[in-house]
Amino acid sequence: MTTHDNRAQELDALIQQAIAENREVTPPRDLWRGIEASISRSQVTLKRKPSNYWVWFTGAAASIFVIVGVTLSLSMNSVSTTVNGQQLELLTMVTQQHQQQRQILLANYEDAGLQPTFSELQSELEQLRSAAVQVTEQLRLDPDNSELWQFLQWLHQQELDLLKVMYQQPRTYQQV
Image 1 (cartoon, helix red, strand yellow):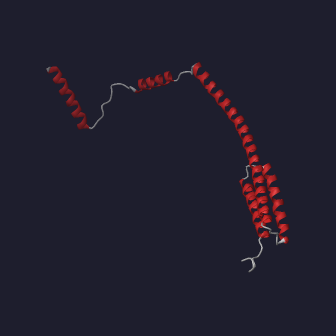
Image 2 (spheres, one colour; image 1 turned 30 degrees about the vertical axis):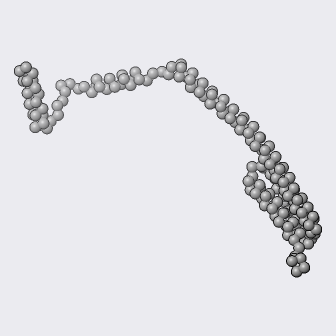
Image 3 (tube, helix red, strand yellow; image 1 turned 135 degrees about the vertical axis):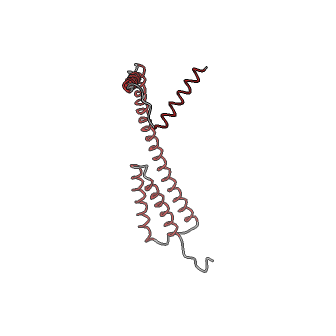
């Protein structure tokens, strides 16, 4: 054990001497060439050629990606055709509903025995109906235009409001 203790004491003495002299311990020969060579060898061995499996997998993934893209594109076209068809059906239903509302309103006024009092408003009524027809035709060409939909609703409401104004009669004291 004394040899072990002697070596430990010698090592401690060398460490204390190096600390006291503030110098570095240098190896007896240049080790950097061996370190560089071992790093270069490990980097070269890490770079491997891709296996045939990886090439096949990449090709299959690209093919699947293209197939999914084409399928989605075709399905989006059929969905947009379906949506356009539904919008045209909606346009037809909105127009028919407005015509029914107009007929009910006119029938109620006629049943009440009321006659239109402002015949000069007839030209404005015809202008509203003409504008509604033009907007309807535009919506057939561009059914996704939300502003045209709103404008058509506004025109229909204006026509109904104008009909109400035309059939309102001023009240007299006798009617009250």
